[in-house]
Image 1: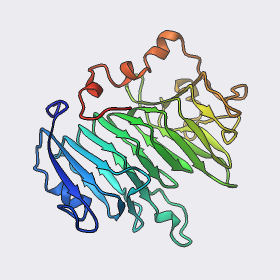
Image 2: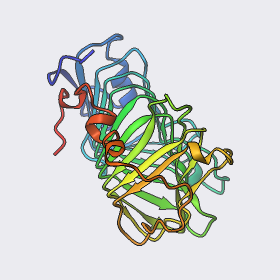
Image 3: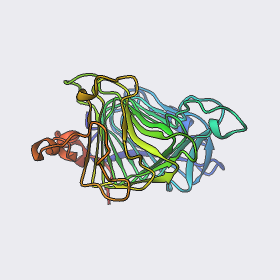
Image 4: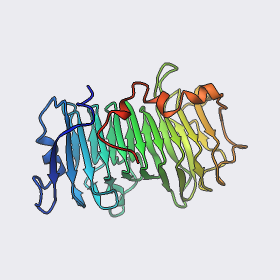
Amino acid sequence: MDCGGREITNTILVDRYGKGEFKTVQAAIDSIKDNNDRWVKVHINAGIYVEKVEISLYKSCVFLEGDGKDVTTITNDKDTAATFTSSPSNVIVHGITFKNSFNLVGQRPMLPAKAASIYGDKSVFYKCGFMGLQDTLFDAMGRHYFKDCYIQGEVDFIYGGGQSYYEDCAIHATQGKSPPGFITAQARESENDTSGFVFRKGFVYGSGHINLGRAYRNYSRVIFQETYLSSVVTPEGWNSWNYKGHEYKFTYAEVNCTGPGANTSKRLWEKKLTSSELNEFSLSSFINKDGWLSNLPISFS
């Protein structure tokens, strides 16, 4: 399914103050017919929308558009369930921040509380924000493209088995004075598993100390390329977590990174990639071999 290429067949307006067709994002999504096969845009006017939003498996070809990640926010502080869940293939999200502030309310102990869970193939997030503490972004499965996004957290705040490319993203660690946290917990299961997280350009910054990642499965795979790493990154960089003795199976690599946190002399299990291996992790090779990114009703400029 290509959802009709670059053409949008219908636009639905959401405004929390009643100036649109719906006051909630979920009501707008629910109005889209099941088994939809043409792009439908849901434009969400500026505002804070306190709700949990789910795009069901039967509602493909949905384009959620906010007025900008700094002014359009969807947030949940009631429980640890994901503020936003996207299950189908062919979903675009632009200019929205998703926040789970459950851990930020009162004196609750920190628990995994997702801002977003992404399950569908061919999903794009452009100029979006993801805010939480632990397990902020569940990059579960499928090919995903994150461009010019802001992602914030303390522990495993980008995790899962997605096959994803993060380009020009700001990764904000908020660990403070606690023990070092972890940006990624990638869950590649085997040598034949195509999943992995590739970060190209962008920057890692924040407070306290943070590891680039820890292994969530045997063949965990994360690559940082041309990324600015601030001094919050620990000298060791990586952690085997529950997979000690399996470190030779990991693919943890840093390629042409810069900044005070980019010194790899004390890194653990750092892999050196050949030029041909590195090419396998380019945008075109890793997630876009069939050219789906150029057949969308959005321009990345």
